[in-house]
Structures are given as structure tokens and as C-alpha cells.
Amino acid sequence: MDKEIIVDGDNALIKLKGRVTHHETRHFLEFGELVKDGLKHLEIDLIDVEFIDSMGVGMLIILAEHSKIYGCSMRISGVTGQVERVFNATELLEVIMWDKNLVKIECS
Image (cartoon, rainbow, N blue to C red; front, side, top):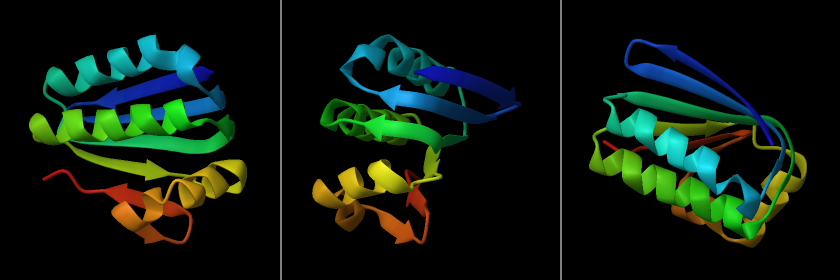
């Protein structure tokens, strides 16, 4: 997985690319540290993610819960293709708000 992190004040955009799997745990720990350091808004852009497994979905859920604890709103955008199918199969979309290709996890 490749990543690009853009921080602007208390907002951050994290663009992921490639495969999001159990091998990416260290990256999600880094994202959690950003939240812990005072972010108010976090967006995870998955438009360039070609594959996500159940552990990748689990890490997104853990990051959302972590964000909530620290008062940070989190949004996942760019959900298409295989990622959308996995979100549907895991019923994640029934747990969070769904708006076409934009998933929002409201943590405030």
C-alpha cells in the first residue's frame, strides 16, 4: 500500500493506493497517532485502492472508533469496485451512512 498524507491545521487527508491488507497495520497506527495529536477532521480516500481484505476493513473501523474517542470526525471516500463489494459483503454499509460512492463515519 502506498499512502499520501496531507495535513492542513486540524484537518488531514490520507490517500491510499494499492492493496489494504493486514500488512498495513503500522500505517494505521501512524494514522491513529495523527488523530491523537489533535486532528478534528480526517478523510481516508480509497479511490486508488484496488483491493481491501477483512483486516483492512477492521483497521478502518478501529481508526473510526479511535477518532471518536479523540473527538475527530472521519470520512471514507472513493469507495468503488472491489472495496465497495467488500463493504457490502461485510455489511459495513449498513452500519455507517452511505451516499453513492462516499462513506461517512460521523464520530462527533
